[in-house]
Image (cartoon, rainbow, N blue to C red; front, top):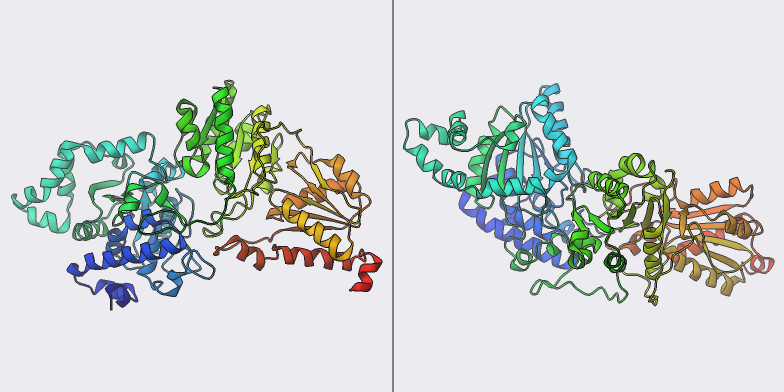
Length: 637
């Protein structure tokens, strides 16, 4: 039996000898590679924190002591060591398997759920302050990545640590990567700290030096204040010490024995302390080391070659169509610039970077800054395009209102992952953007029915002299033929794709193709005549076409890949009320709850009644309930 198989609790981990831990680390890496090659996942970050996580669980006492992981996509090792190494881990990121992120509902060892960067330190500080107020003595450990320091939230928390608590351990896991290579002054500062020859020579020789002086042995053993002062005699104070937080490191994050020694020191600290550890993203798997951006988070892959397993999809991905279209127009107009928040490849802005590097900006994990930065560019005659996933754009809601829409600035937002990101779960589903955008004055909100219409909308957004938002789903398009020359769409004008007289389906985005199949089936099986409209625009709504098509039908059906609460269907109902059209409305979309992770979008559609069979039944039942079925259909039923 392997060492990992024997560990059924953190107590079992603590019972291992120091010499057994390297073997355990190898077994954990093998398990992560094996599972992620089948299921996909965040392989690189997890392979980098194996020794670090082992040391955390041996020195501290989870779940009494609290571990808060920034983003928490690096918690696979933590899960394996806290009773989730069996079938649940085999089904990582799949239906009924464990989440790819920390999840409070999953285990008491997951004290704080997360999926977005920068939340860790604030949450940990809140826990530490609560402990102080209650008078208990548990430890709180915040595990942050170096990329988290590019987040404004983290810097706000740093500013409050020293005035809020005297006991907080911050582990800075520094691998020089977030998803893409880290950018900005913080990344440069950490690199200078790591490569400082004076510091490194001192750090290397410090233990030997302390052995030679009176009392040095006790300094090494207990990590007294003199050790800090010895370091500071040679090295300028760190950024963290300016915030009143003690700093030690950097140390090798793969040296288990060294990690134990320093964490013991941190555990006894009577002041907030940062332990800076250096780790290697993808450690133990050469393919991941050589391709850190791809293997930050990947789909299923061949473990020998690292090549992504084919999904069978032949159509281009929506983000690729966006990237190619934007790059095409940026080459023609140097005032067009692209902005990403540490996601150049995921958004396909990497295409712009390759072709027009001066027109490309990666601001790091700083969505609020990205939005206001774009606003500043726009005031000076530039045409900024922010490519940010729907779920991450939530962070920029205030800048969208206060800095962009209030001033009616021509900033284009392209929101990938609108809809479900099935394997990642609720922190990454883009199900709320319509609700939080359609209430904002001056905002134009649109969604294409296919990849060809996406290129039309990119061109439309670039020519629109005001704020515009395009939402589109993850993955492959519909496989339609792409026009050689994209068209500029009339703002707020819908497209009637099928005429009909009994039912009106007002559909948005990928739901349009489903609506067309529903219409064909309803007509073929029951003779029900269905009008299908590709809405294109959530805001402004095409009220003229809505009035024309809705006033004589028996039922209006809205279809959206978004929550129904305050979503597209709600917008249609509001428009019908304004038009004084009294007609029953059936809204089809995601329910008012956070949707869990699953193996596929199809699994979740089936569960929540958004698969085609369920949608068909929903329409039929609603027509039957309002006595709207044709006479011949009633007799047939």
